[in-house]
Length: 161
Image (cartoon, rainbow, N blue to C red; front, side):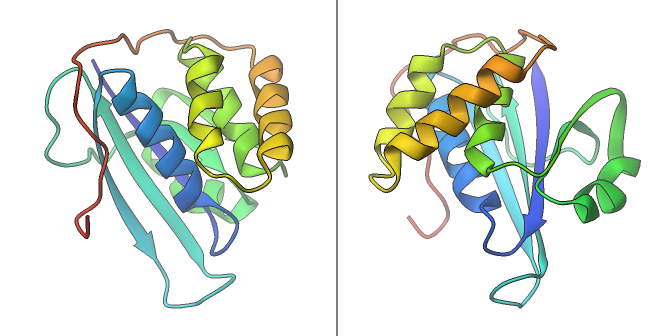
């Protein structure tokens, strides 16, 4: 099992926090996660994206083809749709980033409680983030259900950590 999720949007709109929350939750779920960031040298407004690869085996790099494209703006779809696999899923609309966290969790049939636990670690706007995530979870109609719990006791961290 190997899945690639690209999360893109303007700088400051949350691609990084969304990737962090999802990555932590998926690692806690026992999966291997590798992600890379691409960002313009603009503090706010430039196009940023994160590419996350999830697998049941150790991951040392990302793939170039995308299974799930999360568009926090229209530009993300314009730039990255060409890399979407034939049966890839596009999540788009002008919603908050945690709304997409809920949709991704439902898409992969992951327990919402796992996402709720990760949202508590943000400590800022918990109720609001939880509300957006629940709405996204409820709104998602596609089910891929491919991510299974694998190993225990490993952590999600970046190169600086």
